[in-house]
Image 1 (cartoon, one colour):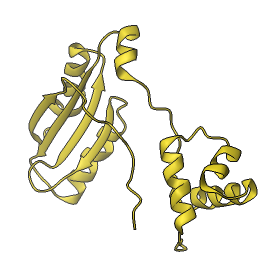
Image 2: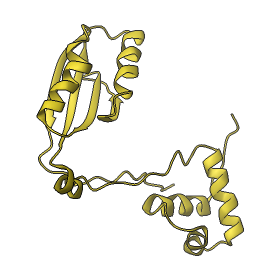
Image 3: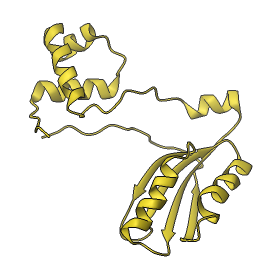
Image 4: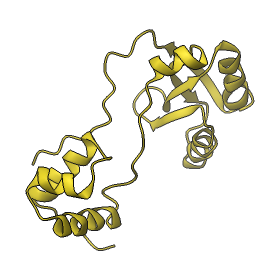
Length: 161
C-alpha cells in the first residue's frame, strides 16, 4: 500500500468536508483557497487513499422521534467468557451485521466490547438482546446504560499537526 502524504490544504479540505460534505466543489475550493480543478483532484486523491471513507447524512433522532415515535439509545458493555482471538472475532462479526448496532468498539481493560445501539422501543431492545447476547453461550455479562440525553455527538476528527 502506497503511503500518502498530506499538507495544510489537504487538512483544510478534510476539515471542511467533515463540517459539510454537501459543499459543491466550487464552494469547497473557495473555502480552502484553491482552484476548483485542484480541489477536485485533491479530494479524489484523499478518497482513493481511504482518508475519506464515506459521506453520509446525519439524521436528527429527536426530530425523527416526533415523527416515528421515540427510540432508545443505549451503550452496552459486553464481557465474553473466552477471549481468544477467534472468539472475539466471531462475536464482533455477528454484532456488526445487526442494523441496530451503530458502533462497536473492542476495548481493554474491562469489558471486551462496548456497543452503541439504537432501537425503536423496549420490545425491540429485548429482541436485540435475545438475538445477540442471550443466544451466545460465550457472552458472560451484559451491562446496558440507556441514554436519557445526548449532550454532544460530533463525529469529527481533530486535524491538528
